[in-house]
Amino acid sequence: MRIRCPHCGERDNGEFSYLGDAAPRRPDGLEASAQAMHDYVYLRDNPAGTIRELWYHAAGCRSWLVVTRDTRTHAIESVEPARDVARARRSGEAA
Image 1 (tube, rainbow, N blue to C red):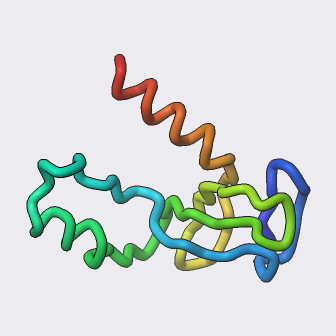
Image 2 (image 1 turned 60 degrees about the vertical axis):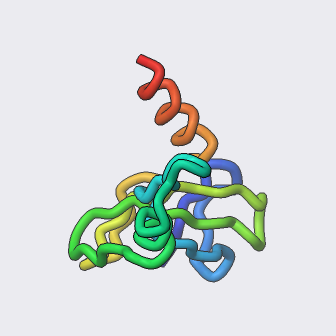
Image 3 (image 1 turned 30 degrees about the vertical axis):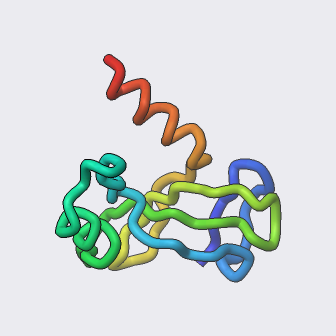
């Protein structure tokens, strides 16, 4: 599988470290229940189809990336800097 880093261009996936699903959101601070924190840390879906994942370009620019990928075919639809995704998420909450 090859990943097109927005900073370095197309690279082999061996240059990257996979973190997991990019969708989970950490529960709010000290107000979070123990069950909510448990669910956030340990419970993950394993969908067949399109998913957004976090990847770290460890052997390259050392950037965190959000990769939209089909888990059935490994076809990559898009790659975005995680910073941009986080900013867009925050600005969407503020609206």
